[in-house]
Image (cartoon, rainbow, N blue to C red; front, top):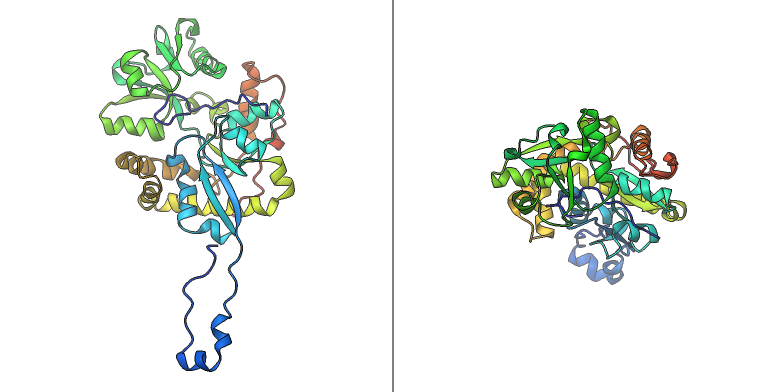
Amino acid sequence: MKLTQVAPLALLSLTIALSGCGNQTAKDDSKSSASPASTSSQTPAKKLTDVKVVLDWTPNTNHTGLYVAKDQGYFEQEGLNVQIIPPGEGGADTMIASGAAEFGVSYQESITQGRIQGVPLVSIAAIIQHNTSGFASPVAKNIKSPKDFEGKTYGGWGAPAESAMIDSLMQAEKANPSKVKIVNIGEADYFTAVKRDIDFAWIYYAWTGVDAELRGEPLNMIYLNKYSDKLDYYTPVLATNEKMIKEKPELVKAFTAAASKGYQFAISKPEDAANILMKAVPDLDKKLVLASQKWLSPRYQDDAPRWGEQKRSVWENYANWMLDHKLLEKNLEVDAAFTNNFLPASTK
């Protein structure tokens, strides 16, 4: 998935402390010379547990809390030596499910489909409380509602969920989905594609939408969750696998606690958090990162009692939507797909 992209949905195709040592105050010279042993009595540094966290795509503001947790020492305080890594060829979900990375960034969409296929992914925290994705188009295209999709060309990446989503929104408006032309543009840049090949695409507003504002290219945005509660799903999420939860629950708890601190920092200090992300990934567009962070920070937790909280109804609703649109072969075992058990106490 690409963040200046047209693909917020990443469906699976799987087979699948601080060392704690601050500067110690030295003993005075007379004591240290009288008792040499006292100068070598420091407590040994706690051994940190190596952990890999795989991103879903290139670093962006969805991931800020992870970079903050690393930069501010929150992971180390929990006894973790965290390495943030890009996804391999098989994608983040494959790496998380197989244990190649203990944790990673995933989506309710892909976890739902993956679990139906027997993939042991589990969501442990919602990074963003409400779905910020939707169909975007340049204002000049005059696409203000799903009914306006008629006679237009949609650019996507070839997933069945795309046509199902377009059908769902258009049917709610009594429009005709057969009048939409759908083309596969893969990872083509949204801004290039809408000038050349297509009329609208599926984006995350926090990145591509904010980028459009900065470019002076206003767009119309049709948010999915404005048309159905079933489409207000968690995207993205932090995930692990069932084996980690069963065999290393304390590690999962430690990771989630540190990540929560990182996202809380990003909520309360968006500019500082943006600077931390840019320090870690200097190739990012500074203006975009800062603007995106300011837009996204209040939306991480939003109206939830704590950052990361997930509702059973949200998982159930979206699974039912997928089932209704023949994107799932059977019912999802909802309670196995996510857990709030590793989140720290209320952060509001």
